[in-house]
Length: 115
Picture 1 (cartoon, one colour):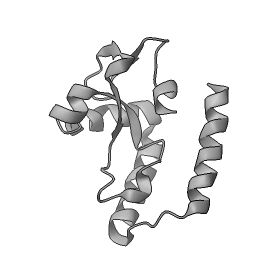
Picture 2 (picture 1 turned 90 degrees about the vertical axis):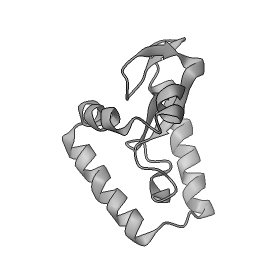
Picture 3 (picture 1 turned 180 degrees about the horizontal axis):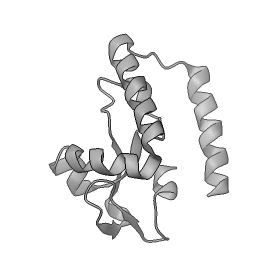
Picture 4 (picture 1 turned 120 degrees about the vertical axis):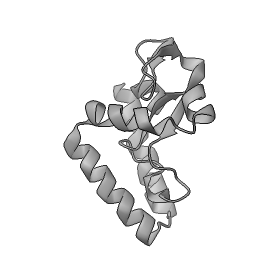
């Protein structure tokens, strides 16, 4: 879903961190908050954006640039809400249940049809 949402056209996308236009084959689903400490944000659409393989892998998310660009993309209110959710999940953890995942699958399938 992220690959479809964040593409510019059928062949390229703009990296959330470095801002470069790259081929879709180089796109990763880059998480702003890592899922190791914030597993509840693993499938959060505000936490996951198209990121080039170089920024995601070699620059470990290129978080300085990601932090500058994310509020511009999703808006300051959604960015602030994401930070609150991240704090909650870091303190409390998250356990995924089958029902939750099935609901997410249905939600994402519906979004894909609209893209």
